[in-house]
Image (cartoon, rainbow, N blue to C red; front, side, top):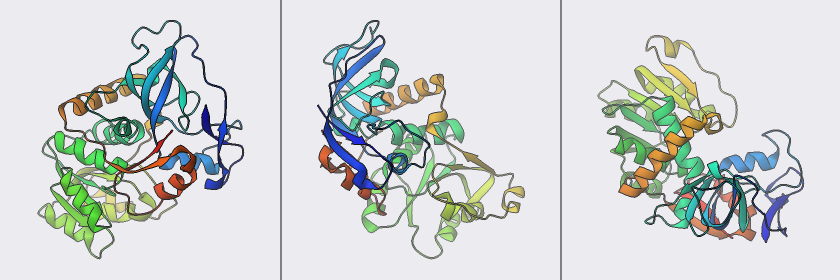
Length: 319
């Protein structure tokens, strides 16, 4: 089979399409014939060596969707021919087939395409963990979703709207702002414009927002403190550097700044996440948006695109 392999850390050019042996399932494992593969920013950080050491060569990626090809001994909940999506793999997802632990594989509802299935694992898992598990958001609260037109952002807008929250999204392009409104935001503002923080506060009648989902904390965190309401929670989902803040901004409001990493979720939390995602997919409240489909051989181009500003949905690779 064909797979993307990385033999050394570096830029997108280190992603090489190679022929490798087909995986075979061991006890408790399955092999998935992949139809679509999700591309996430975290994979660019891993490729560049920012997430610690790796054993070379390796195949990146964990989000994908396809059909079960083979199951190992002891696997009873899955069978050959099942439509599934993956939230993690053993062998890497940038490939025609992936070896997975059975706990990394979830049923893909019939109304969801393979491309949409490949957009679920990290984006929707992250959005749900941030909004529901870490922020403990409640119906009637107001949430601000930074970068709401990206994969995680769209997921967060849909989840928050379904949970009965008032949703304010930010996006840097007219196309992105239109997309955010189409997927459930009550309001959208231009985060590239002057005074958008004042616009956000004005939309809440001067009270501020209860929850902020922060995708770029090194740029926005200090400004977030001016928009958060009393007893509000800022959830840091992403950051690309350091920032200086005035901690007094948290004091008068009893505001929290909470970090979040999907990989810290417990097994019980992951079961809860994916049970909720399946329900939302089946009832139509969750609808992953695909921005672009590229051949597996163009993984390097996909890595360049996923880190470019102005995202409008998810980039997927087609093996």
